Structure formats: C-alpha cells, structure tokens
Image (cartoon, rainbow, N blue to C red; front, top):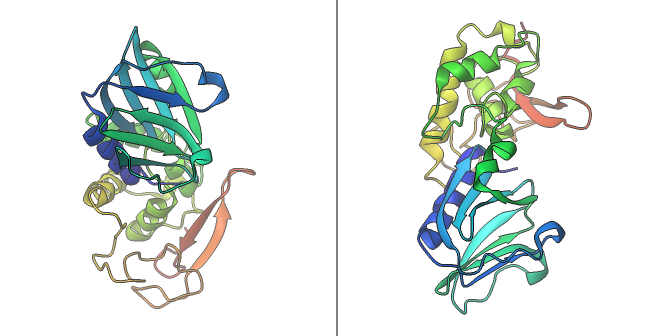
Length: 263
C-alpha cells in the first residue's frame, strides 16, 4: 500500500491536470455510482488526507470524490488521444477535461458524497503528516493513548498518524532504536518520534524513491526494510522480520536485533 508521500504526489499530479478545469466527461465505473453524472462540473482541487484522496467538484451541489489506492490502485494522467498504459477494464474512474484525462485504475475505494459529508469518510484520521493542519502534540497524544499497545501497531494506525505505512514504520523504529514488538510505553521521547516521522515523509515527498539513509544507490536507500536475512547497514547483524498486528490485519515488519534490542 502506498505511503503518505506517494499519495501526496498523486494529489499533486491530479491538481496539475484538473484544478480549475471543466469536466467534459466523468465516468465512475463502480456499481454504486455508475449513474452519477458530473459532466459540466468544475474540478476545484484534489487534496490528500493521509492515504486518502479527495477530489472536490462544483456541480449542482458541491461534491467530493473520495478514492483510496489500497494495494494495487493508481491514478494516471493522459493527454487527449494518448493511449492508456493500462487495460481499460481496470479503470474505475475517468475524469476528462478535454486536453487531459485522469484515470484511476484498480482503485480500492471510490465514494461520491456531498462535500459536507467529507468528515464521514476521513474524520476518523489522526493528524496528517503532510497536511497543512499537522499537529505534533495531538499526534503524540493519540500515539501514546494506549501505552500497552505494540509500537509497530500504534504507528500504523491511521487514527494516530495519517500517512505512515510499513516502510516508514520500519525505518522509524530503526532510527529511534525501538523494536516494533515492544509496547508504546518504552518510547522515551514520543515527540521526537513523531517529528522524525514527519521529517522523513516531508524529505521524500518530491522523490519517486523512498530514501532514509541518504544513499540512493540500489540496496542502500533503506536501513532495514526489505532486508530480511541480510546484514544491517549500520552494525552488520542479520536483519529479522515477521508479520505483526491483529489477526487478519498483519503487516510485515523488519528490525535489527542489535540496533533495536527488546525492552
């Protein structure tokens, strides 16, 4: 599933292609909204909220198109007449403004709601790590609300920090020296942790490749993520991994047992 910085970049692409443009065609290829007609409406803006995308459209009433990429989804922009790079049967949303079309392929979620109901969809999210209303103290309050919860689970909970995924969770735990299986209570300075989380996403949001080490060479850009059975880039200890989380919601985690000792 894309991290928050990748979703932010997607919103930027959609903004550049659609903002201020009149829709000549809007095709929502999902059963619940197949008859919706937004043609003639004007795209106001697209914003990211954690891992969610909100495309605001002025029509007969103000609408919000809410999409989520989940594991396989993507938004791509094509010039008029340009051939799509993915099969048409995978398209879930087509927003055509004449000179360009934005096509959402294999989107995990497609909702269309009156603008006033946006909060029903994303109001549960915690502070957005890349949002204009980022609140680090509220993020700390939410993260530490359940001290006994495993740290790795708490960091991935979008109700605590919106936009953090498995890659950044892994690298954040490594850089702060905590085993993701330990409880939140072991974190001595949670404010430093959430500040570092925001800094990592902010530094990478304009880059197509996540880099937390400062070295963008192949196999050197991440400290431990994806390196199970390989040597830790810092100390040389073999990196371990496991699936952590509640049954049915497990996510992969990696850690260096030397750099991140259990507490």
